[in-house]
Length: 101
Image 1: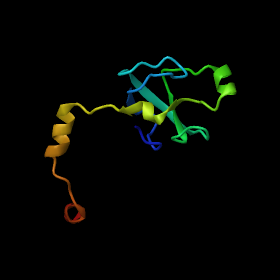
Image 2: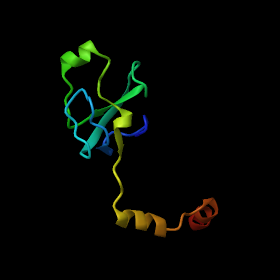
Image 3: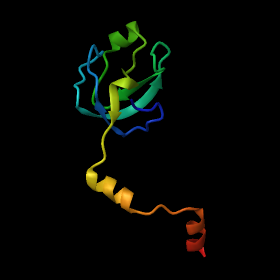
Image 4: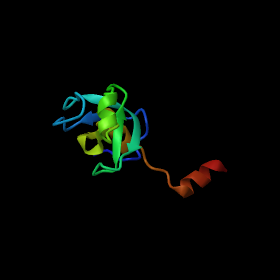
C-alpha cells in the first residue's frame, strides 16, 4: 500500500483492480496526481491518478475522488539504482562537518 504522504509525480503500480470505480489494470504503472482525504474510505485517503479521469456523476453519488491506497504499491527501483544506493557509503553528521572545513 502506498502512503498518504506520497508526493505528486510518483510512479505507482496497481496491485488490485477488482471492483474499481474506473478501469484500472493490475500491474499497470500510473502517476500520482494527488492524495486526497476521503471520510468513507477505510484508509481515509484516495489517490487521484494522472492517467484516469473519474466520472463526475459517480463522484457526486459517492465520496470517491480516486482509488483506495491499498490498490497500489510503489514502483520498484531498477537493480542498477538499488546497487548504487547500497554501494555508496552514508555520511554521518561528523563526516559532513569535516567536509565543510
